[in-house]
Length: 86
Image (tube, rainbow, N blue to C red; front, side, top):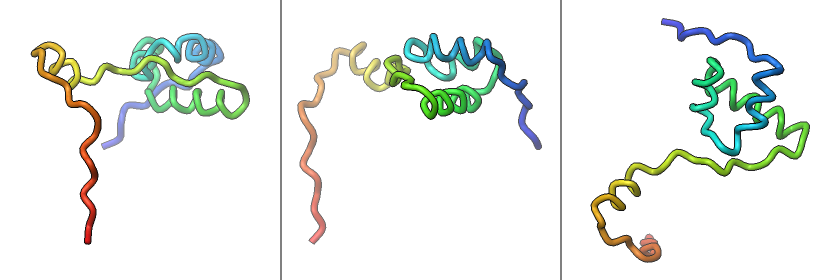
């Protein structure tokens, strides 16, 4: 079964991605524009190849960290030492 085919992206889509990529997730941009998140990634890849495109600053919140925060659970300090094989 083939997946839903997305429309080709336009110059206006590229402009929207360029202006909003740092503030929105790829999925949010894709939903807003009506294109796939893979197309958003392709636009970002092309922009990075040809310009000094900024790194992402907005990320989807981690649901585990949100849960820990809501429940008021104590956070672990530092990482546990790695186990070594003998």
